[in-house]
Image (cartoon, rainbow, N blue to C red; front, side):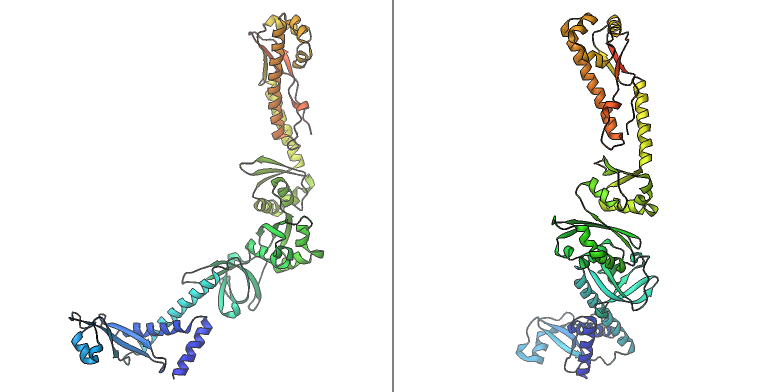
Length: 475
């Protein structure tokens, strides 16, 4: 009898992956719980598992005291010495055996439930301690059953069940009972309800781990995966970087004749994978990430907001955007930059419209240059002498300018210096506009688009130089 019970306990412990002592403790607690139905709640009860007989013994415990207040839990020193002699001392505990024969079917059922609960708690605690540090690890298992679209997977030789929720399944994949499956551990729960291990087939970590398994250079650390993004079942992008200048990171991941990446594609049931080279330069990184579409130009729109503008040839625009915007969306997630993608023609029309607006502003005299100290008559004399533009005023000598304007040479030099300063301001403003809006993404065409100030009449004491030439649009 004893050997049979002991063997049963050891077999159960091995099956559940827990210590036999935990099961014995669970049995003792179960009998104690059932016994409290038949004994007063004030009594102090204790249970012990007898290894020799395989039975659980029940005891009523009383503490030795000088003066008894509660006879249910206390025993006087005199009574104890009468029973045990001089060995009895104050605060010692005395155990009195109690019968368990009255524990019937209901008590046995209660004991069974307690044992099951204790074993289950111990089992879940062991699972948590074993796996909570293994989040992000790829494990293999067998599809056991399906529950409302979720898949229950047996791992660790069938000892543990894990859950692959529907939301973590790729839409390109279908499984049947008995299929082998590889997934990444996404979450480990400590709670007492539901499956503790949550698996995923859509997490980008799975893609990274698969590359580590298939590409020796990644496993050794020569090539580093800098990031990965996925739309599971459709497409993924992986950014890689080589620490050795002699090793091509993209070529290492692709493998000879594509053998390495093809093995990963088969594992992911045909999911397309773009492998791009990582760069710390966002312009270069985004250019690589947009592949397979060729990029014409990339310019930074805002460093603070991390926004880039990408210009694509008209016939390659659909390839760059991808199906329902998938390619550019994945590229933005991979790089961490917002991507404003435009076609060649679209950008051309935008630039032309912006320069038209700039021309309208200049025609409305929004930019004005002044000649301090000259009256209307002096202005007419300058115009009659052909000194009616900023260029002509700066090209002539200070002596001739003084003669025509009827001022001294020092004043003439001061007038030319004023023209230079104001012309520089106008040119700088035009250059800034060209730099932010130019079709060549940062190559301003200041020579063609800068306003050409000319001399105009002024009824005040100062002379205005206004732009009359239309700005030219450069491509």
